[in-house]
Image 1 (tube, one colour):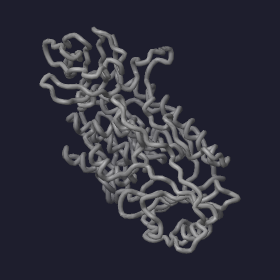
Image 2 (tube, helix red, strand yellow):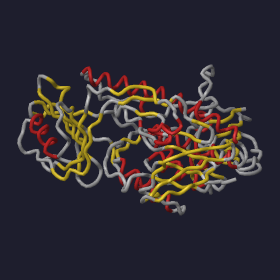
Image 3 (tube, one colour):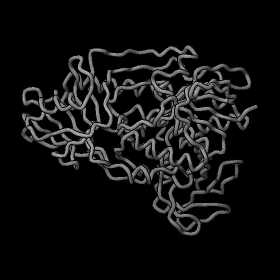
Length: 473
C-alpha cells in the first residue's frame, strides 16, 4: 500500500501539514493550481498559539526576524490627530506562555518561510498543478492531477484538501459547506506604499461625525508597505486609483499618495463550516473546512492548527494505528465552530460601529483551545494545551519543556520519579532542586513546571506530539 500523503493547496495550512509530515519521514506531495505563489498580506496576524507551533516546526526564529509586533494605531478625525490605540496591549512572557503577543507578518511572508523549511526535507510545492478528480477505496486514494494539459494519476494513502474556500476536494466529495455570504458588506483590501506616513505606526482616518467609518492603514514588516482597508460602496473595480480615491476622501489631507499596489481584493463576509471534515481517507483542513471573517485574525491560525493536529495522526495511521484519525473531526470541527462564532460576533460589533470593535483580548490568542471532555473541570486536564516552563537538564544547562516537546514525538513527564520508557516517546523525570533519579531527568528550579501541571510527586503526564495533554495519571 502507498505511504504517500497528497496535500492539495499550498497556503499556510497545506504547507504546515506537508512540513509536519516531511519531518516525520512520511512521503508527501503538495500541489497547488496557482501558477505563482501568493504575493499579498491577507492573513497577517500570527496568534500566540501558532507561534508555539512554529517553535516546534523550527521556523519561529525566521518568523520573528521577518515580522513585527502589532503597531500603535494613530487615530485621525477630519485630518487631525486625536489619540493612539492598540488592538491589544503587549504583555510580558511568563514561564507557561513564552509568546503571549500577536505577531505581524504578511501571509506571503509566512508561506515563504514555511516553503523554505519544507525544502530542507526535499519537498517542493508543485505549482500549476490542479487536482481535478478523486476516487478512493479501502486501501487508498486515487487522485487525478493536471498540469499544462497533461493528466497524471496519483495513488496515495491519504489526501488532504487544504485548497481554500472553493475547495475542489470538498466539492468532489459533495460535502455541504454550511453558512452564508453577506453581499451587503464589502471591504476593499490592498497592499500599498504611503511614504508620507511614518511606517512605524498604523493609521485610522475618519470623519469626526462618523469616527467608526473610515480607512485603516496598517504597516507591513518589510518593503515599506501598508495594508489598506476601507468599506467599499458602489461597483467600482479594485485598483490603485480607487484606493487613492478613498484615501483622499477620509484622510483630510492631500499628501497621502498611495503607490506600488502589489495586491488588492474585495472581501465579503463569508462564514461557512463544512458539514464534516473527513470522508474515508480524505480530509479537509483550513479554508476548505471553514472560512472566517478577518475580525479576530482567526482563519489562518485555525487552519495551521488543523494541520498540526492532523499531521501526527496521519503518521500514526501509516504506522498502523488508524483509530486515532477518528479524533481529527471531533476535535477540530468543534474548535472551528467556536472560533467562527467569536469572529462573527466581532464582525457584528464592527458593522454596528461599536467603539471596542477593534479591541482584542485573550479569547483571540487560541491559547485556550482545548480538546477535553466538557464535563472535566480540572485546572489542567486531558485535552488542554501543555504549558511551557523553565528547567535545567541533568548537566545543569537551561532547558524548557518546549525544548523537550520539540520534534515529531510524544513526551512523557514523570514528576518526582523515574520515567518509564515508551516506544517513540522520550521520557523525563521532573524533580525538585537537589534531587536526582535514575534515567533522564530535568530539574524544576522554580517550581513552575509542577505548578503548571498541578503535579504532585508521582504524577505522570503524556504530552501529545501536537503539544496537548494526552493523559494524566
